[in-house]
Image (tube, rainbow, N blue to C red; front, side, top):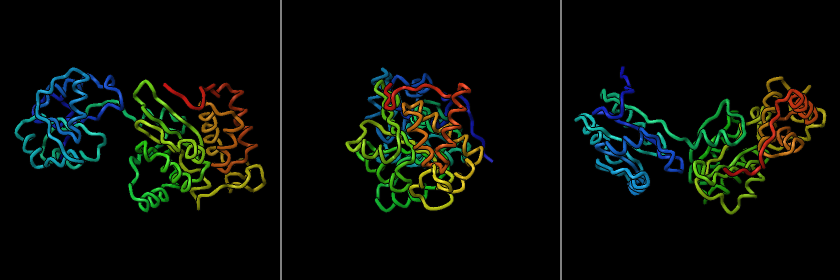
Amino acid sequence: MTRASSESAQDPGTLTLAAWPAGDAADVTARLRAALATAGLIVTADARRLRRLAAALDIPLAGRVATGVADPVAVGEPALLAELSAGQHVLLVSGTADGAAELTAAAAAAGIAVTALPGPSAVTAALAAAGLPAERFTVEGCPPRGAEQRERRFGELAAEPRTLIFRESSRRVSRMLAELAAAFGPSRLAAVCRDLAADGTDVVRGPLGELASQLTGGAGGEVTVVVAGAPPAARGGAVGEPGEPDEPGAGGEAGGAGGSAAALADAVAQVRAQVAGGATTRDAVALVAATSGLRRRDLYNAVGSSRRSGETPAGPPRRSSG
């Protein structure tokens, strides 16, 4: 059994994992500043970005910089392990944990201390700004490049009940939104977030179909897309457009008798999130009722009860900028 150490990043023979700042160099923590200044070896997929970051922070890089073409560990896991075993302090800076997984496991198996530096996260920033349920979520990262692989992946995720978080290039985000709308249904609620750590933070909220047509020119900047999880009706079968929620029996089992208390409470929370994002209560109820299978009248009454209890917040415009 191996044991990971949480000792200071200054200890010799330590592999330190760090993430790029989410967009603004000012978000870099004091610990990452110290690690950049003192690491004997810095491993990254983008040496030029690293040097620009160090220059912006006025930090001289005392150690060597090793670069992998696409994967930081491509510089050679055995070589890095040898450096670590010899007492070298290695700092690995990357955008995701994927490239570090094998190296981290190998280092831990060799008895080398591994630590991670906390820092800003586009994932949690987008989740907070999206106004969608955040109790349970899954990070899907960047979708596959190939059309068939993307279609298969989105089809597999169509019934996922947790909130989904994707990263995508601004050049491809409009295509991804259209594909998500086709796989999940155009009424599924989502938020497109860009430049989360910069002064020009922009969040656009709405149903996937509307976002796909609204952002045809690309969102610009670094983009994180947050999509609401599948409603109960979609989890039990094919994804499609539900019937008019006010009609008796429409919307599946969740629509009968106003649905379960848990489903109704979740739907009320989604309506409140939409209102906080600038939607009218009427539009928000219509959207959430369509995706949840609940009767619009029952949901509207539940939202009214929530408002009388003083729980419904007033929100900023639907498109918000920081």
